[in-house]
Length: 400
Ligand SMILES: Cc1cc2nc3c(=O)[nH]c(=O)nc-3n(C[C@H](O)[C@H](O)[C@H](O)COP(=O)(O)OP(=O)(O)OC[C@H]3O[C@@H](n4cnc5c(N)ncnc54)[C@H](O)[C@@H]3O)c2cc1C
Image (cartoon, rainbow, N blue to C red; front, side, top):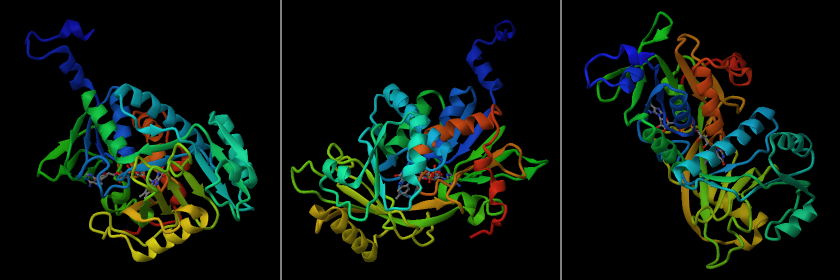
C-alpha cells in the first residue's frame, strides 16, 4: 500500500518510511532483562533504542560475572514455564548467533526433610517438559561420589538444564540486537518529567534528551534509585560474594562433565557451578548479605565469607578441602520484598514500564521474561498479577 504514496525523493526509501511509522521504544538497562526485552520488541516490529550506563553485563550489573545456573526447580508454575521458554529461546538464538552460551550440564538440587520441593516440583517439571530424575540420597551418592549427602533427604537431578554464560550472554543479546538494526547507546539515563499521565523523553548523560513513545526501565539493582517514589526499597540490593576454588591439575572430577551445577536447599544455602568454563569450582552463599550500593560499593571479598565458603566445601565436597582460592567476585542481588519479579506499568505514567526484582534468580528467566515484557508493552497481553506492583501495596516505597 505504502508503495503507491512513496515520495519522489530517491534518498527516502520505503524502509525508512516504514521505520518512521514504527513505534519508538526506549529500553533502559542492557542486563538480562532489558537486553532481551529490547530484542523481542525489535523482532515484534518496534523501533528500539537500548541504553546502558556501563554496558551489557558490566562488572557492576547483577548480570555481570561468568555464569548463572538455569534450573526448572521452582515451587511456582510461572517460573518453571518461564524457565522452559527461556531455555528454548537460548538454544534457538545461540544457534542463530553461532555462539555457545548455554551449557547443558544438568542441575542437581538437594535438601533436608520437610521441604515442599520433592512433592511440588516434579509435576511442574513434567508439565514444562524438563527431563529430570528423583534420587534417594543413596542413589545420589552412587551417581556423584564426590558429594557428601549427609543431612540430605531428597535430590532432584534435572537433565535438560545447566548453566548460562552471564556477561557473555548479555553481550550476545546486544550484539544480536544491533545486527538486527536495534540502536544501542552507552549513556546514563534519568527519567524525564511525567505530564498528562505520560513521559515524553529521557534525560541522557551527554546533556541531550531522547523522545520515545514508550519507555521500559530494566535497571536491575538501580531501579529503586531511578524511581524512588514507586520502587524505592522495594528493590533492595544485597552484597553477595562468589568464590572460585582451584581443582587438582588434570583432574576432571570437579568439572561440569562429571558433576552438574548444584543447589543445596538445606539451611546451609550454598550453590555452585563445577568447571565453570575453566574458572574453577564456583561456590556461593545464597543467603542475602548486607545492603549494597551497586555503583560505589566495595567489591573486595571479605575474610568471613571466604572462611564460610571453605568450611562449606570441606563438609559437602571433602576432596576439595583446603583447595586454593583462585578468584572471587562481589556482586549484588536486587531483591524484591517477596523474591518475585516486578513487571508492571508505572502507576503515574501509562507509557512507562518497570521490570526488575530478579532477587538472585532472574538471569535464567531473562529470555522468556523479555518476551513477556515485549508483549505487554505492545499491548498484546496484560501484566501477570503475580508480577504486578499491587501485590507489594503493604510495603511502602521508602527511598534508600
Ligand atoms: C552472585 C549472583 C549469582 C546469581 N546466580 C544466579 C543464577 O545462578 N541463576 C539465575 O537465574 N540468576 C542468578 N542471579 C540473579 C541474576 O543474575 C539477576 O537477577 C539478573 O541478572 C538481573 O538482571 P537485570 O537485567 O534486572 O539487572 P542488571 O544486570 O543489573 O542490569 C541492569 C542494567 O541497567 C543499567 N542501568 C541501571 N541504571 C541505569 C541508568 N540510570 N541509566 C542507564 N543504565 C542504567 C546497568 O548498567 C545494568 O547494566 C545471580 C545474581 C548474582 C549477583
